[in-house]
Image (cartoon, rainbow, N blue to C red; front, side, top):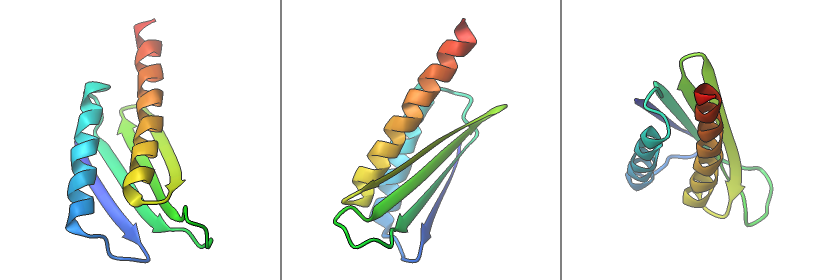
Length: 98
């Protein structure tokens, strides 16, 4: 699985990138067919405590799943996005089995 991590309008630390790669590698247990994962970290323009945004897309041949979330940290936003993608991968797997 190829992982691409991009930060928009800021420079992320290596710890965030390592944490992201570690968490994304766990998606393989939901689908071994994932070819690429793209993650975009952004700082939202609003002035609320929850202004850290994460967009995640995972590509499976013939299908793409997407998760987007906003939280009070990039790590929390990543967790929410991964949870959304995991749910979609489970639904996709169930659909294939039926």
